[in-house]
Amino acid sequence: MSAVAIRARASETARQFDARVLGSFEELEQIRGLWNQVEWAGPDADLDFFLAVAHSRPDVERPFVLLINRGESLVAMVVARVERIPFASRIGHKVVHSPLVRSITVVPDGVHGAEDPTVAAAVLEELAAALARGEADVVQLPHVPVTSPLHDASAVQSGRIVRRHRGRVDPHWTATIPDSLEEFLQARSRNTRENVKRYGKRLLREFGDRLRVETFRSGADVDRLFSELETVAALTYQRRLGVGFADNDEQRRLVELGLERDSVRAWVLSIDDRARAFWHGYAYRGTFFIGSPGFDPALSEYRVGTFLQMRMIDDLCRDPAVSAIDYGFGDAQYKRSFGDDCREEADVLLFAATARGAWLRVARNSTVAVDRLARRALDRTGVLQRMKRTVRRGRSGATG
Figure 1: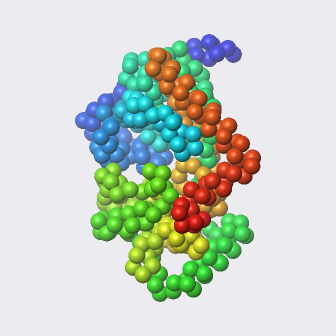
Figure 2: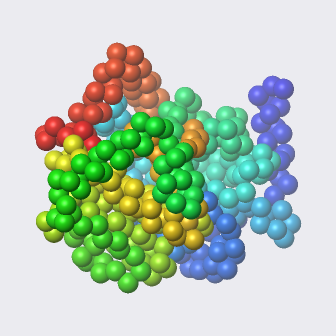
Figure 3: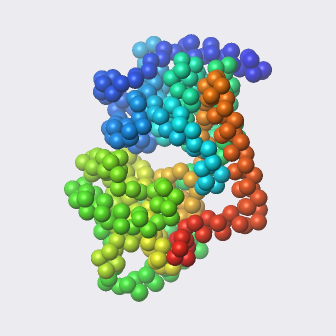
């Protein structure tokens, strides 16, 4: 079938549905009951979670929530924000191009109902229509599984949009939580099990009673929790890159919401009453979604992060509300070592069919192409992995 025929079929498909966009916070409250009936795959699309983020970010102009109905039945929902943000293009970690754009930014796991290819096509058509109306320069759908109907639908170009091709594919690791830590470790490689045992004994032998692990959940002192996490986060390589945990209004709102719901869990490892490592996250619909962990790189030879992760998993094995861990987006050695399922994901970007949209697309494609070539060259020589280790070591020479 030709591309013209495919586009014609997609447009015909879209006419089977009725679509409505909600663009104010007042309208979102009016559909709270409907929203809460949707079984979202992750917490980002939860209404209260979404509101906490939107109200804490000054760049957010308004919500963009797309409802698609067939007759009286809701068949799809898209949770997004309209925001004015830097549209950063990177080569490695270096930002080389960052114009300010108006973006319709879909939250992670913020598309419901697109498992049906017909519905996925309708979702893309409606997002394209928003660009055609001039509501934004770009639509950003992050972390779309490359085997999904939504990703397939995005490969069909519409006359009103231009899709960015050849986006980088990243792994997304998850792990099943069994009834015990022993069962969890038994499913890992022999080398991983031996390392957990060896480094755990070494840490306890070195620090003994000076080491303490504290768990924070419902009823925790928020100020003290943030003080402990910030003490560690300030030392991490993520902080040097401008990512990872930060004590800011958004994180405060989300943690306070999670503590109210008894969905937030945090584990802090201290030595001599000083925080040296932490793990935290949100329990949501049976899955524990990991936040960005942190550890003091000066203690990397003891694998304090791994030690604390095992304490966390031990607790999660005993938690009847949790049956899986989601390690989040992107690759890392600890995710490969302790994850047992991996799916490939890529961002989907749709650009307005304007001169500015075309310019943004060309600029992004150019930097993506250079970044890909550089990564391939460095990966073939082993330099890329050494560079990643160097970034994680920082000045201390730690390996993580």
